[in-house]
Length: 230
Image (cartoon, helix red, strand yellow):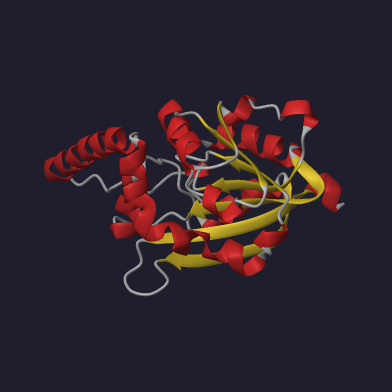
């Protein structure tokens, strides 16, 4: 399997291929601007929310979660799973955060997660990054992952849901592009990045949706900070 850290590019086979690539890039840019609107982003994600989150429900007792840090929370996509817990969501998009504040309980903060400092030295037993890291290059991931590990309580874990790269233009490849993420990676590359900071507890590959044509290939990773695991 490829270890490239970005989506495989379309093959360069002359002017028609370049023209097609240009059209796709333009369409992706337009759709990206549309998805900046919280209501439209939620509409785009709604058919897949449960399927994407399913492995977390299988491997964890969500009712026992006490304190959540949801990194790249969007317009509250995951907040409904944690109504019983102390929930903090972080996102760069002020419109997403405003939307989430109107609809969910918890603390929603406009911030760059790479510079976020938990208030009063808070630690979280459930640190979540759902489909965030494929928007970041390797250097940004290596900056962010230790920060996530540093927010985990002594009995907590980091939970990551991520897109796995398709090797050729397929519906999954196109949907990854339309989701505004240029850095989907192979399973091996994801695990290599995570393993620099986190000791694996669960690593599960799965398809979204679970039945029918695959739209996304996903990876669920649950890990403990290496220092704590050692």
